[in-house]
Amino acid sequence: MEIIKFDINHAGIEELTGIPGFTQTDAQAIVNHRRGIGQFYQLDDLRKVDGLLENTIQLLEKHTWVGPVHEAEKTDINHACKNELSILPFVGSRNAEQIVTYRKLKGEFQSIDEVDSIPDIDESVKRMLKRYTRVCPEYSDAACAVA
Image (cartoon, rainbow, N blue to C red):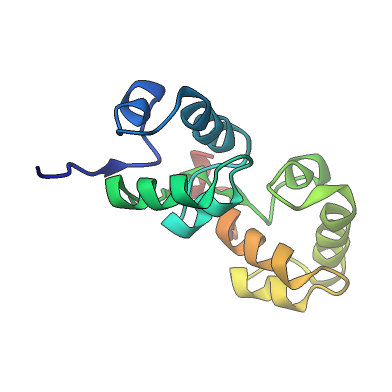
């Protein structure tokens, strides 16, 4: 029997519960994670979903793939306020304040890799910033204006 794979970032409850052995609770956990944290960037991100057991994750890895994540869904690190930054996954208020302070002192980010230069932010948070933010030097940039 051939396994038909689907994009985990677009799968609904019905599609997920169609996987043999996958429960309604597991499906709801995936959907809730996407709503609260955002899209999956790789299948290994499934390990960050609260309540999913390793055997469930291995089952998902057989039946799903991760499609491209669109830049328009990322937050513009140059123009986001503290509150917008603080709601990003794993960032929080203190780190958001560090980002805003750094931006005021150094000016706009020219590259997302500049987050590595922000002092007092944990490396794991910097990795999340690189995933969930982008650099838009000017509002006139059409690709950035959609966000």
